[in-house]
Image (cartoon, rainbow, N blue to C red):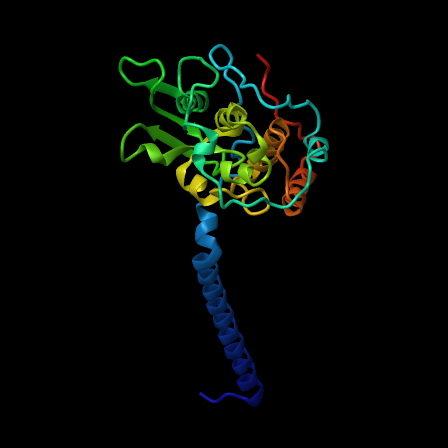
Length: 267
């Protein structure tokens, strides 16, 4: 079969276009694989878009508010942030968890320790161990830090999957004013339901003693409440913020100007 020069040029153009399309498809596949093995695989298991936007403070009828250093005023979280002192961190060399008293005391004197109070408050359909009205055995909930469904099962191998987080970490509090509190006030800070939330164990470990400048919950829906709660705890116990921490808090609250301070009901 003999091709004319015009037909030959036409076929060559078609061939080049085909190769160009194949090359573009190959680049798209490579780019897609690159995205998946860097950010994509994490986005695929990231927090749901409808994760929780807040967490409870008190459960009426069986929990009592803990006496803090000062009562948190109602109103804008951003306005309350502006009342907090701004300073650098104090030394953490002398920090010891025992400065905040024995872990999980019954500060509100309802007959149950704080850890089980928070589990009972935060878990849906909480059940108790046989013969106890305090010791939570199991329950499930929409976990606020990640936004995923989580299940608590009491046991040596399973309890750590759900942990109780100090919203303002005790190590952070120690560097920002808690050294000046009395031992009793520090005990209250460590056991105040305002400062405690049941969360995913891995997320709690990731947070460690970070403040808002260095760690925020992966569930973006929860960040406004989380920051407002930190501000409220710091106001309640006369703690300060660092300049970087205040800037981070202001950025978060800028997306929710109506966010209110988190206030526990008085006794």
